[in-house]
Length: 356
Image (cartoon, rainbow, N blue to C red; front, side, top):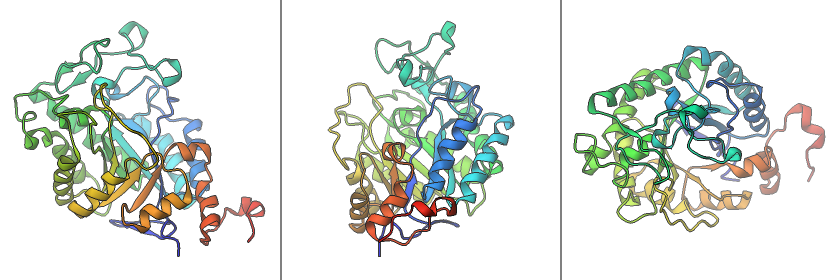
């Protein structure tokens, strides 16, 4: 029996298989509002057979957007269209997840196809914020350092957005603490030079994330899964590393986190990453074994047999696919055929199903 097509339980929810669509920014929203592009993009992956679909990084406040075209959940007005999307996803057998995020110093940028450049206010950009007033590159305007009292405001942004996510019909929430965005900026000593209770040693640097986890867990149903995406390594000397990731995972597990989505990098411009197929899988394996928490593997995973191998070797519990799901929205249906798994096709597409 295929491990990839076995069910996976996360708290009170069950994925029909272990393929998860990784959150991928579409840069297609206006004022944070979803539209039919998001409905078709996310909905087609549900029709394609994924076990769960995580909506792109969705900003908890306007200045938390990576670009002016990012999705948001900072107002109740965003909920209506998102309810339409989650309803469609669930009607077609997948779980609907949302990744709550704040981009910190990496906010206020143009979309990738518009240059991915920091936007000035006259270009529709805004002043960015971060734990410390350190720009991502020397060519960018420094962020404002968030003062100690204001930190609580940002924690509250995540909690309020979580409440809206429940109302919008999401089955689970993922907190984005990776890729050099705000939470990761607090975690990494390369980005965080604070001298208050949110900077300095490991305990202080993780405090922002741990308080967000507590605030979110307090406002969502007890049976609702809570996942966290981390960058398990900064890939830079003196930065965040896998050993700290294990320590963090142990604490997150004790505080109501159900799965660690193990990515890496994005924190600093001078990172040195050797990207190759499955290059981040060892992070998922290490955290899974040493922290005894469920993990997700992500990064240059592109074939059904690669997915199956990772799971059978107990390196991760679920596989998160990004670019491969852009390339082939029906990857799960095709992978099931390749692995000999019994998976139903949508009735509307049944006549195209390959026969043995």
